[in-house]
Image (cartoon, rainbow, N blue to C red):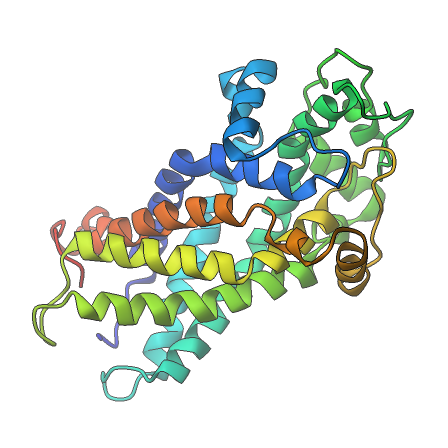
Length: 330
């Protein structure tokens, strides 16, 4: 591994990769959020396919991309920080350019995961509010579920937007409106609600993902001195991403519940990570922590496969005119 890295090029690589990946998999991510927020006896969706079909029927095709704007805006710095930070820590932890031990690879991943939450937490916070609005509206229209008289919300903007009557759609609200109201009522900490749960998810994810990807990618190298083909980087990224995603899915369920500001009637609120974990375990059982695991695996597999291909093709280096575009990873 080279001891010198071009930070601007790595940031461009991560940003482009994030935009391409999120555009491809966002509808599945929306289904994941809605499935994770469902409570026993109040299910609106049976599975991912059912969720996407009902979303298109009730909200139109672009309903599957509710919240995509904030994700596409912030995924560039998020993925850029994650991948560039991992490169940075790997360079610092390597000795004389030699390969890293698994433990040092895990340390580098840990550092990357801790850095990215600066962007990930507010991005996820805003995205979840927009993604879950359709579920709340559909739940109120569903026969057999007691129509809530109110939604348990934390601020007036969310209440006005999500407190709907049967057979009506939630009024549109933007991420900017939600962010402005949170900043006005709660300050910057309002955007960072669920920070602890985000760390609990993203740090272990990076600890699992980066070493696993690095070692899988080595298997595709023709020789120790040659780079693996770009298609092998894609396969390695898919395998490592889906594995890490399923491994930390319980933490993602807790994070999603904590960051959902708008609640339907009879949906409990949580005071923190431990309270959330204990209530889910008591009322829904251990299987609740696997909600959305399949969707999350389907999101992370192509997302990180695309990320690694774009990253290792050297798009950033090409844009910065440091090298030609490559068809193999380096």
